Amino acid sequence: MMTTIDVWLNEEIGQINPNIYGHFIEHLGGVVYDGIWVGEDSDIPHIKGFRQELIEKLKAIHPSVIRWPGGCFAETYNWRDGIGPREKRPTTVNWWYMNDGKLESNQVGTHEFIEFCNLVNAEPYFAVNATTTTVLEARNWIEYCNMKQGTTTLAQERVENGSPEPFNVKYWGLGNENWGGGGCMTPEDYCHIYRKYSIISKSVGQDLQFIACGPYEDIPEWTARFFDKYKQMYTVGRVAPMFGYSLHYYVTNTGKMGTELTYSDAQWYEMMRVGLDMEPFIQSQFEMIRAAMPGTSVGLVVDEWGVWHQQNGRHPLPGKYLFEQMSTMREAVLAALSLNIFNNHCDKVVMANVAQLVNCIHSLFLAKGNACVATTSYYVFDMFKIHQHAISLKSEVSCKNITYSIEGNSYDIPSISCSASVKDGILAVTLANLSVNEDQEIMLNPIGGQYTGNGRMVVLSSNHHQNGNSFEEPYKVTPVEQAISSEEFKLTVTIPKASVVLLTLDVSSSS
Image (cartoon, rainbow, N blue to C red; front, side, top):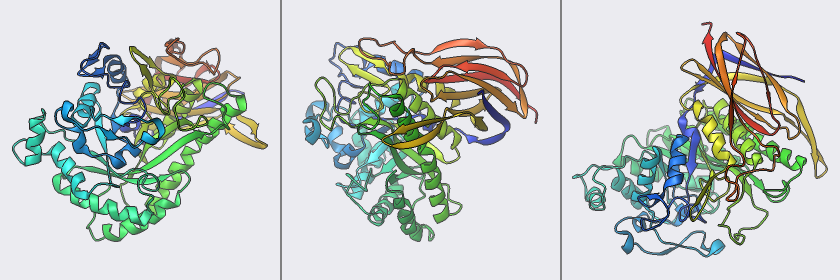
C-alpha cells in the first residue's frame, strides 16, 4: 500500500514558535558537571569553562530556549548560592543526593548559565523555587537579573559580580511538579502560591512571561481544579497574565518496552503508541483551559518530555551517571513524532523542552572526559530546525496501520507520523516511519498549489533499528542527503524502515 500525504498549502495552522525546539539542563548526574561544564582550568577544549565541542554542535541546531536549573533541583535551590566568586560559593546537598550521593558545588550558577545561553544563542528559561523559599527571594532573583545598572542595590551586586548589562530573562516558571516533589500540593494550594508569586514578581518587569505548573499525564484533573481557582481572581484583574501552562509527558519504560538497547518489535511499537498519546493529552489540556477561561491566550509549555528508561532503578549503573541512558533509532523516531505533534499543534504549544541535554534521559549528547557524542536525537533536531518560524500547514496522511500485541493486549498505530510547514517558498515535510520492518513508498501531494522545482531528501536511518551512537562508534548513525525530483503536482519517494526523513521542495500557492 502506498502512503499518501496531502498538504494544504493554503490552510495554515499557525506559525511554529522556535521555542518548541527547546532544551533542559538540570543539576543532576552528569548534565552540568562533565556535561556542559568542564571548568576553566580543564585540559578539555572549552570556552569559559564550557565544553567547546558541545557548544559548537548545539549552536549548529539553533537551540531556541533552555530551561534551568531544574526540574526537581529547583525546589531546594537558593539562587544566591550560585553568584559571586566561585571559590567562595557554598557546597550544598543536591536534591538528587539520595540517588547518587553527589553534592552541589554551585560552580555553575546564574551568570555561568546566562553565559552558556549566550554562547549557543538561546533564550534562558528559569525555573523558580516555589516550594522552599519565599516569594520575596523569587522576586529578588528577577530584580538581580533584569534591573539596569545604577538602579537598585541588587542590580549593583550583579554588576560587581561581573555583569554590568541586565540579563533580561523573560521566561520564569513558578514552581516545578508541585503535585509531587515540588511540595505534594493540591491544585488549589499551588494556585494560591502561583498567584502570589506572579503578582509580586511583576513589580520588577512588565514583559515577564510567567509559566504555571500543570500536570503530568496521569493527573489531568489537576488542570480543571487549578483554573477553577485561578479564574476567581483573574476576572477581577488582580492576577498577572499567564504566558504558559506547563505539562510533563514522559514515555516511561519500566521494562514493558525492553531495555534501552535490546527490545522486540512489539516493544518498539509500544513505545511509539505511548509517544503518540501525547497528542490527545495536549488536545484535552488545551480544551480544559479554554473551557475554564474562554478567550485566554495561555499556551501550553511541554517543558519535560522524552523517553525515560527506568527499569534499572534510580541508582546509576557502574560507569554511568544518574539517569544516563543510550539512544538508538527508537529514540530518534520517538523524538520525530513528538516534534511533529508540536508542529501540528503550534496553535496550542508555545514551548517544549526535551529532557535532558546531555548524559541524562532523552539526551542529545553523551559526554565524558574528552569525548562528546551526538546521539540519534541530536540529528532529528538538526533536520527539524527548518520548521522554526515557519507556517505550519494542514496535512492528512493515508497509511497502513500497524497491529501488534504485547502482554495479552492488541493495539493499532499508524505507520507514518508527519508535519509540514512553509517558509520563503520552501515546503518542509518531516516524516517518521514507525515500521521496523517495512520501507514505505510515499506520495506527497500539494493541495492549492504546485511544486516549482526539485528538492532534497535527508534520511536518518540505520541497517538495524537498535543501532545508535556511542563513545566507541560516535558516527554510526548520521543523516544522508540526496536530491529528489518532482512533478508539478506529485512527488513519490521511498523511505526506509525505522527512519526519520526531511523533504524540502520549492512550491507556489494558487492563492
